[in-house]
Each structure stands twice: as C-alpha cells, then as structure tokens.
Length: 122
Image (cartoon, rainbow, N blue to C red; front, top):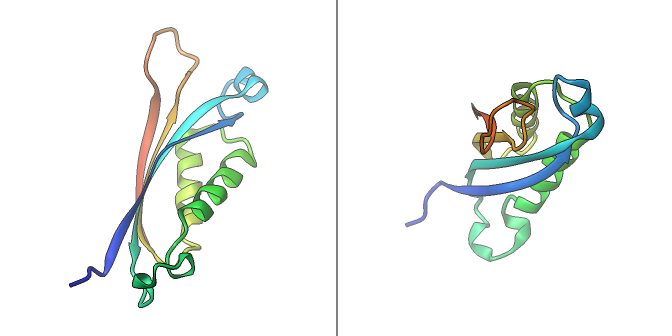
C-alpha cells in the first residue's frame, strides 16, 4: 500500500544575505539558516525511481536561495512569507512549514538564533 503524500525535509540550508532593520545589517550582511518541511502529493509515476517523477529538492533549494538572496527584507516574517507564497508554484506541494533563523542578531545578549516559524496549506 502506498501513501498519497510524502514529506521532503530540507534542514539547515545556510544562506548569506543582507536582511534586517538596521543599516549595518543591510551593508555587512549575515548568515541565516532555513529549515523547510514540505508535504508533497505523490504522482502516479513516483515508483519509477526517476527524478522527473518527483519534486526535486534541489530545484526547491535553488528557488529558495534565489528568492532569499535576490532582495533585501527588513523582517524575517516577510522573508519567510514570501518564500511560502512562492512555493505555491509547485503544484505537488500541499503544505509547507518554514523555520527561518537569524544566526547573529544584533542584540546585546547571546542567543543561538532568533527566528520565525510559518506554515501554509496550498
């Protein structure tokens, strides 16, 4: 018995970008980390062991990278929502969850990261 959906888990995608509210963030840039969980509809050809029969995680990563680094966002919430909205271009995706983390936020205390988690059904 096969399931109608499966999940693609992309964890720890590290990208350098110039996002933030403060001018120095936009000038110097910093590293971000993105985790994505995608619930994907199976196609009738999924069992063929062929890349063309599934949603390519590499294509998703490249699209997210281009979108995330292609412009400057002031807010993590806006960047994450933009990515979620854009993932709607893949008809196979039923649901997506993004965890976007700023690894070195400009705050006067030490934290591992600050981030947002957003979810969307398609």
